[in-house]
Structures are given as C-alpha cells and as structure tokens.
Length: 181
Image (tube, rainbow, N blue to C red; front, side, top):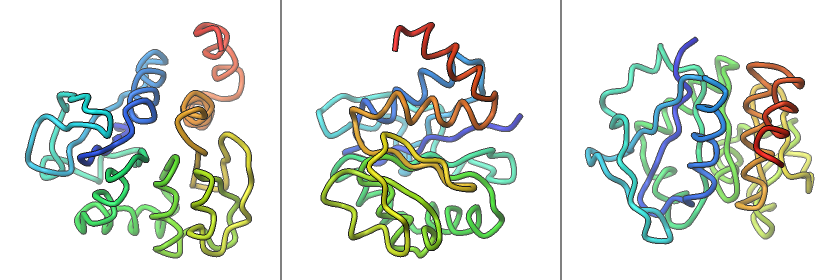
C-alpha cells in the first residue's frame, strides 16, 4: 500500500493531525507527515512543533494513497494557499482517489467544488463553506472518496473512519477498543 500523507501547514491543529498519524500507525498503515513548506519542522496553532517525515517537494503523488488535511487556524488557510497541494487535491478528487479533511479543512474542499452531491461535516460555523454538500453534524462522515470530520473532539472518530476505509469496520472497532475509546 502507498503512503497516507498528512499535510502540515503552520498553525495546524495538533490533535487533529497527530491523532490521525498515531491511530493509522498503530494499525500498521504507512503514514507520512509532510510539511507544505521546505521546513522539516512545523509549528501548530498551540505552539507545538513537530518534525516531519518529508517536505511537499519530495512527495511523489503517484505513490500517495490518500491526502489528509488537518484543520486549525491559520493552518487551514495555509493549506488552501499552497497551490502545489491544491493541484494535487483537485487531481485526487477528479480521479476518485481518497481525500480526508477535518475541522475547518473541509471548507477547502467546499471552496473547490469537491463536495457537490456529497455528505460532509466540519467545525460548527464553517457549514456555509461546504458548498453543495449535505451537511451533517456527525463526528465523521465518509461519502464516496471523501472523509470529513467535525473538529478536535472528533479526531478519534475521524482517524477511525480512515482506518475503516482501508481495513474495514471490524478493524476500526478493534482499534477503538484497544485505545479505550
């Protein structure tokens, strides 16, 4: 299996990004933390700095299984302003390849027209940015190739939804039990 890449912009929401990385690695899925800048360390919205596995320019998107976009501010805005990443998000959605976004980050998908006819969720007060989506208030929603999550408090269900996509409901349920969720 190719890498699931979690993309980090300055000001990312630490729990959303790192919970996905943690749970997917516990499940032995290949996950890379990728900086959207040329810097190997990225600082989150709560001043936690994390060392990345790669920088954006090193990623071969032909060998990426899924794009994961954590929320946070200004992390979400920084992700959306990264044209090289947005080109890949567009290409993934067009090719029906998996893209996941949580908290404010689903707004990126809405702004780009990728949620039309899909079900989605996001951080409360960002619903108007989910253009064309049927907006739900679930912790996490899988709709075709797109997975969305509501916010920091939904980081575990969001990560388990990604795990479910690759290893099935039973594996996600077993992981939830293993981590006492």
